Image 1: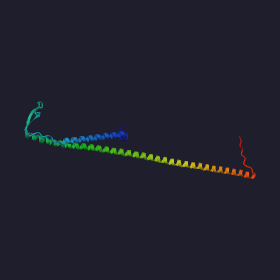
Image 2: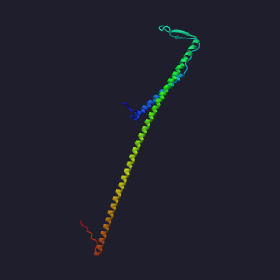
Image 3: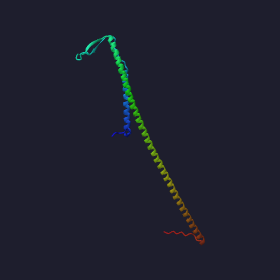
Image 4: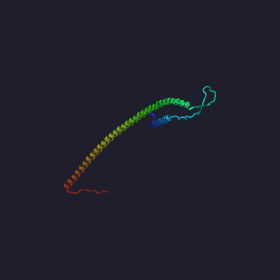
Length: 196
């Protein structure tokens, strides 16, 4: 079963991205160093005759023999080498351009995948935040409703307690008034009993 790159954990995906970026950078540096070594011209030999080793083309079984090359022959060889080196340089340049194009294409694909991953993660984080925000708002509404219900219950209880206190006060006042009227009518003081 093929794993999707989005299924990787954040740490694994970040490590994969870092490794890929490092590989691309090292390939680009390697390509740059190869390009610099290719552009250097070969060192030319002095114009005087120099002995060179060359294998005989007629008999391959014979060992290498020493051949003295004259300056004119040396110039002809240099021209042949330079023509061949130009063809090699053209091929090398074409190969280098193709490789750099491949690297850039891979890099662009990597960047697009990274951008898609980043956008997906941001969208998921935003959705999570919105859900949490809605949950918080809902909890806030519930708490506010609970607070209002509590206040209404407290007001109701306090109103009932005030009513009872007022009734009790009236009852006690009427009791005192009745007793005072009875004392006035009988002209006797209030009876207090100290019983032990």
